[in-house]
Length: 295
Image (tube, rainbow, N blue to C red; front, side, top):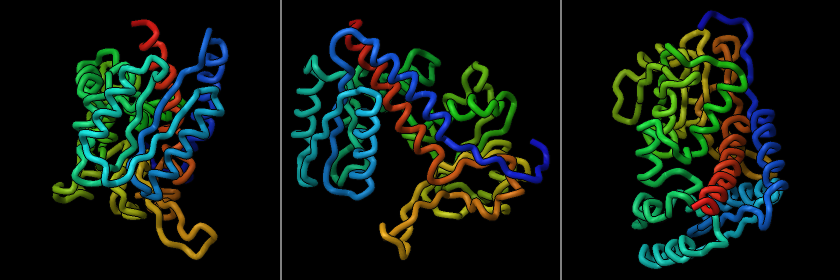
């Protein structure tokens, strides 16, 4: 990447709109009932409530039927497993999504691994994880899939580039790394993972041609962490208290103001990767519908 004078904002809006229009057009053309997805939410975590509402609203806009099942924080893992088993066997349900985070001691991994692969619209079960790393046919986790769609839309090449991902979760970091390592036009990158035990973090992130931030530390990454001319993909989104009607503002991990004129390109928060996560969920739900009906 070369030095820059102006930083391009990589809005997720046009990318998400393109994906959603394609999904809507295909849903309208389907014979019979529309695709159906069930969202399972445990407790009343504010962010989880908001995310599920956004997903339900977007599903309705593209013609996908959604149902939200809400459970108390005291629910046992055995009871949730029973609910997932019931939905697995329900032919009227094409997709199942378990909203994270879950209250302790519920195991998100154990629960998601019981969702039938063809209904796992989040792509988190072991079957899809394995297929992804083997470059097989998988339902890909929505945020990493959305990031790749963003790179494609803005023609940001990854082949031969140094990509540093500040995240090692199974939701973002690991699947994104797998995608960017694949033998594909928007793969073939050299990928480095950083995390809470990484020492000399800034010396590693400064080597990145493409830097992906997803650690939930608002405005933590400024010029001292970013090579001049790098592309910064900001996945972090944190509610920070503010004196406004909502009582908070959403902030990313990148210090956007500090990076203006320094980074070649930057995703805004909000309005960036988050929009793509929801759009890719709709695409995965449509794919799950086809998987369920073509068994």
